[in-house]
Amino acid sequence: MSNPYEPIPSRSSESSSGSSTSSNANTHAFPPRARQPVRPQTEQERERLAHFEARFERPPVAWWKRALLIVGLIAMMWASIWLGRRGRNKKPEIIYASRYSDEFKYRPAASPVITEHLKDGRIRLRGASIGGVGVKENDIPLTPAQKEKKDKERREEAKNAARAKMGLKPKQKKKEPNIYDVHKARAEEAGLLF
Image 1: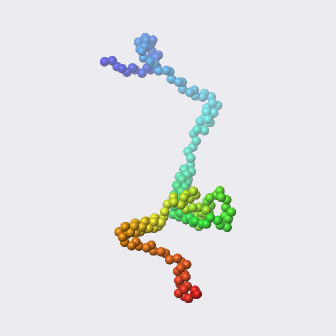
Image 2: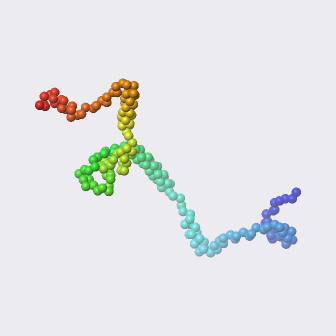
Image 3: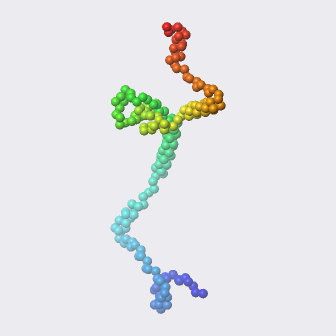
């Protein structure tokens, strides 16, 4: 069995007799190494080189500066977390106001919404619909109370339709008394009306 690995050429083999190099004609020699940088010989060159190398050999930063940097980073992280939690606790309450006020009496038509930040953190919107600008009344999502009221009305209508189908008399909707009529009746009872 022949050895597939070739020996690494060395300088001694190159400097040996020509017969040994001719016998290993198929081996490849490595290119000669790059020469080492020349060391400065004179005192002036040594000083200049030492001054040049000193720029890259700076002393380490003082320990108290490192500690101050770490404490500052920890303080900033704590402040960001604290401010985030503080802002999360109190959310602004939006108050819907009328379209015009004394302050914005002649509001231009190009500004559809006026947002006013009040001192206590609430936000007053002027000229805004509940869903926003350009949102139709039918597209505005219902509140839970509105959903419950609509669902109750739908059930009552279904019950009345079923009663009518069975031949029973449907229930009348409870009519909420008009405030004007209530006050009129009370005034008549008290004898204030003639």
